[in-house]
Length: 89
Ligand SMILES: [Zn+2]
Image (tube, rainbow, N blue to C red):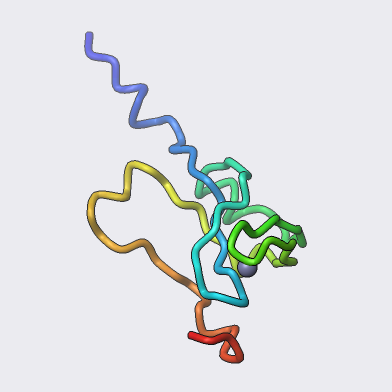
């Protein structure tokens, strides 16, 4: 009997955001899986940005889950990079 439970498990990743000042991808330190995150209500959070050395406020719609298993050389998605056109990049 082959166990296939592993495919049933949600892949936990780290919630990432784009730094509005520099455009860098920074980790929020929050861990969740994609389905949980996508079904979560819109929320608001703050994350310390190591690049700017300050805290950035962000909404769930600006964030995404960086699932480690999907990072196989391909560039991760940036769903809402355009929202900060005032940024340097
Ligand atoms: Zn920043």
